Length: 185
Image 1 (cartoon, rainbow, N blue to C red):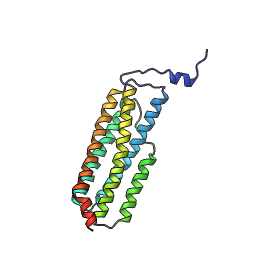
Image 2 (cartoon, rainbow, N blue to C red):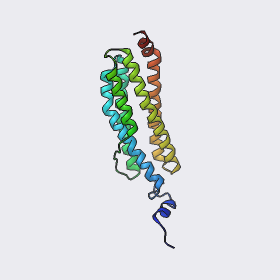
Image 3 (tube, one colour):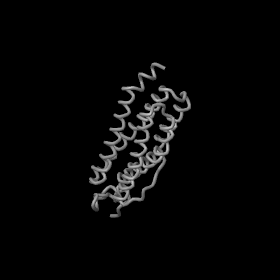
Image 4 (cartoon, rainbow, N blue to C red):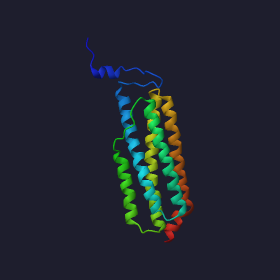
């Protein structure tokens, strides 16, 4: 009885140190989503300096600078993930991140320079990005665990925790200063 390519994929068994299921359609989907978030991180790294420059408060500018440094680490971590999986680190356009970054540009264009209203808008845009990243890294971590890629799952967990911490820091900045000052303008 001849086997089809689809049957071979369906019956793929985990192999190698990371449990890689080389012929698995699910594994291919996982790799594709890693390429998507890799693109997202690379483009966020380019956008954060612009957001820092647009920020009014020194605290928000510092938060964007810190996040830019962390984003570079996320890129390196993703490159390590690709390496562990025996894949080349390549990016695939992430339409979601492209839209979120376009929205951030719109907030900058639609608000007055030097205002806390702009900062409130920038925090809104940044938190939308964070929530997208949290959802993506959380899901990719579970995918990795389900395929037996425990070393990959650990790296994705580290990035996930960092993204959550950034979201909390942005919330605290908004609640403790920016929002009240924006309302008063």
